[in-house]
Image (cartoon, rainbow, N blue to C red; front, side, top):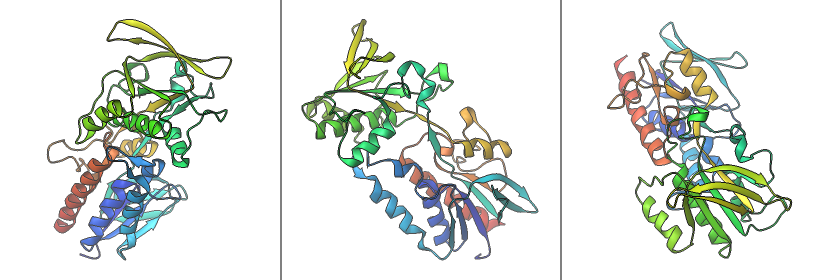
Length: 340
């Protein structure tokens, strides 16, 4: 049993959780990460919804699981090829180094939508249009300011940037943007209670335990104002504020507002690695994500012998969902290794 091995590509939440579960069962794991630091997209966040738990603590707890002698971690290794040959899965990195194993698990995660593709919103053009990730980085410092260093008196959060958008080709919901906007608006008001926070939305999707409660609390405690409508245009004013045009679809009236900071809640897209490796193995699904054998009981299995999937390489998932999915994938892999 100890001679059997698994390659896991991607050391984010799913990859680390799966590696730990497989190693605990006595199998050798090669965990490969393209970046220098482990933790994937988790390292970009300060606190997590809905309970504002410290993201750094979750990341450290996960990484601490990698102390098993059955796990070998290779960071700064970008896998460019993955194929099955001579009864082994082979992963090749950009330096042409090969890794061989009996099974392979894709945990290549996601990337965020490039907000520059929505030119009308002014990201990359106007100083005070930022993304939700940039907001997180500012929040980590405990100070959220405009590019000019001023405390925003008015801040607006825009949902569904790159999600549920036919113009950019993404018809799906990214699952996390609505609740992340509620979290960030609440965080902003905790720091600056005298400032105003507005959330623009198509509809608020609060389908999760404690999500609806957090949404209600943001209104009752923090006075966050929710406006049903998408922003059609953003432009800078002479004093470096952002003028936004929208429509309040509840009242049916056009709306024009000036804010100090506009935060674009960027959606989830398939990572380049996901798209590339899934295409090579003919398991590419919609929108560049990897495709499992089926949603009901076969969601971690592919139509390729010994090739498995976990996490957001398949579709947008929350962190708790990703951890659960990684455990399920590990169980499937252990079952497979026991049979070969």
